[in-house]
Length: 237
Image 1: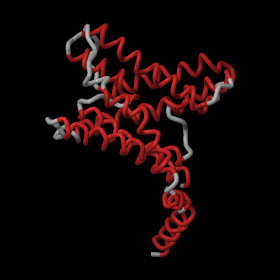
Image 2: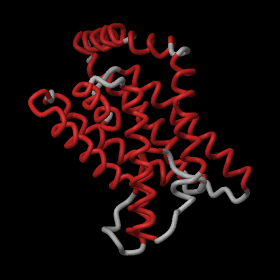
Image 3: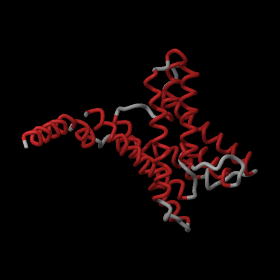
Image 4: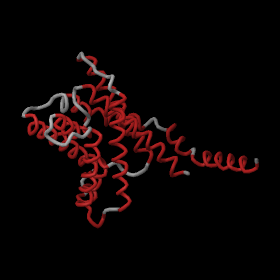
């Protein structure tokens, strides 16, 4: 029961994260780091240059490749339980597609509206990440790969994370030139650079005020007693 409760909260956290990702994409000022490459490939797929998958489906593919990268980096040191990252990555990608559908109405036209959407998306994303981290479950592939490099090299995680994120953005730019012959500012734009800095600040700020969320996590025993009491009541009837 505790396991189910923890992962129900994780599912909610992932939904908040992917809502932020979707709103960033809708801003047309540049997607968040985790969705840069999937967004490029989705746009190329719409032109018939690659398989026509959604952003969420390409996110699933990218997450799977990040898990494979962990296997190559850690080899025998790779903990098999981390293969659950594949499941978490699949859920994450599926929720991105769900939230893309839910935000289809969001089409900002003016620059202030686009900027507001970008700030809102990054804020929501940061809140979701802070909640996901507090759930203490399986690591997301986007964090698992930098963790693997840290374990092997001894380099501090924040530095590795910045390098990995910058590499994903750089690959997105290269893919833009490869598919479209030009930089696509709506995919990798000023909003992407803003997200790289602002999301981390939101995570740190929100993380200091999550005592209520920890109490929700700690509510598991009471939740279990409630179910057991309900079961006894039904049995007596």
